[in-house]
Image (tube, rainbow, N blue to C red; front, top):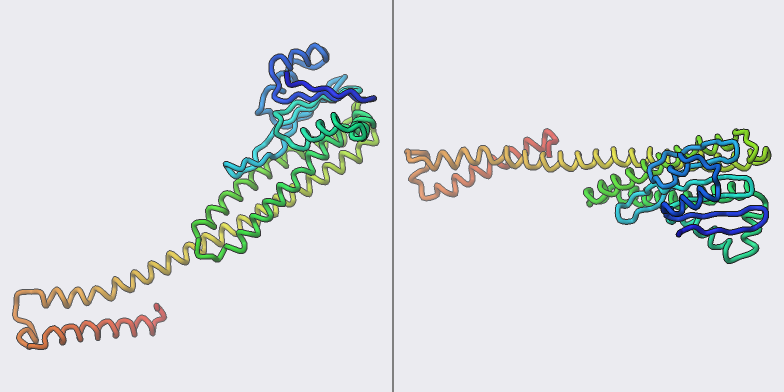
Length: 305
């Protein structure tokens, strides 16, 4: 069993990490009013964020980013919240640090229990969601640092490494944008919903969370625009470097053409000028050098070199 319970007037907090079939059955027995579809949702890890309203409770599904160091991407971690009169039930996979830390502090500290649960269900729900939303800021700060590092290395010689880093950061930002954007309508619904469980004065509190999410969305959008600009710049620099290499190789190839022609002619088994001259090699080499100098001067005059 992975169900843990904290009882502190006037709220009882039930926390379930990695819910098993036994956990769901116990939750159904304890709260018979929970809809079977909502109980089915808590065992799924692919539910889209939503807010379901029942006469006796609210059911929230929300996603928050979790950094995957191996894949270097922020992945969505789901948390399900049942809001009942005098009860709050959280169901998650145990990876969201703010939620896990909040429960552990409540278990260990009476003052923390009173601060989180002593002011009613509405305040407890607001506090938990607010802490989860605030946890996104350090994640975006890490993205900011990576973006600034790319800016510093953009004109470095290691173009391959910079392009790879741009691709990884852009993928991470896309994931963060998707996660953040999906939470905004849920909080805005909480801000405006009329339900007996939610008190009217909580509108301002949930509005504050919505403002934080909008700010996070703006930061993610700005980073996305910046990283796209860096990608365009990196592509331009890579194309320029390729063009420079191709230009040099083309010049070398063009210079070699007449030299190859001269050497081919003098390799023929026919009578040629200077063929019997003891200085034939020096003369031929001089002709070749003259051709090279002449072509280089021509290329220089046309600003091709």
